Picture 1 (spheres, rainbow, N blue to C red):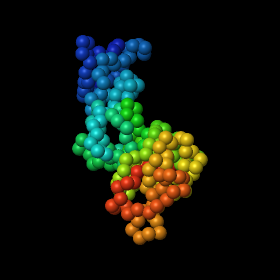
Picture 2: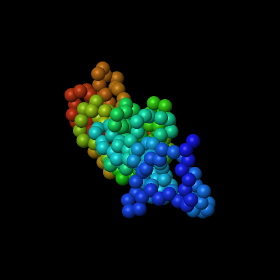
Picture 3: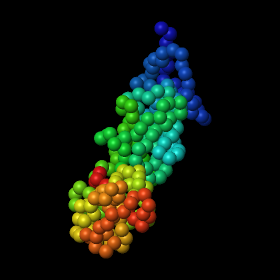
Picture 4: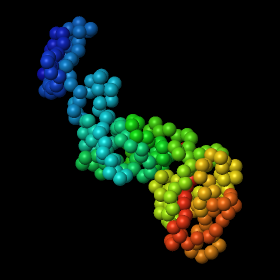
Length: 256
């Protein structure tokens, strides 16, 4: 085996830092405290040498992100050519993110991003401007370090097991209202949830009993849904979910 012998240190660059490929082994024979390689630039590909600086500041795991709907396209500083378990990526969230998210990397198949419990991030768990960390495991990216307790922003805690949206949403048909809650990681509230919130926590809501609200309940009438509120905590009526526009709504969430 050919061996290059250095008596003190190897300086790869002076004015500029750069990566350099050496086609043989390097053996240091100078004083131990002087044995070093200096001037190595930050890595730019997966096979480049990783300096202590690169490890400390996380250069090799950092990625730029662009968002299109629920798809997050990440462009890592060091390009990834395969998806391996244990791979780590970090990026700065450009906005609040929640619900089913898909991670796309150049040249690789898009895959979902899920919490460790296997479900999408809830509303409020990824805030704009926060650092998001992903670890590859199996067939998905796992979101780590997310806040996992409490109610989403804009909701009121109803006991220990329910969070209810504080602001009443504009008039809509039942199905669009239900879809909106689902997209936020929640659902329309049930009849008993509305009654408990109204009768015991009404002061926390500035617009309780100001309009009919859709519930996640059917009625005793065929092809109809339930609306509650307007005048009292027990006021109730049935309405056709497809042709009644006078129905406002609010979403309910399970605490994180």
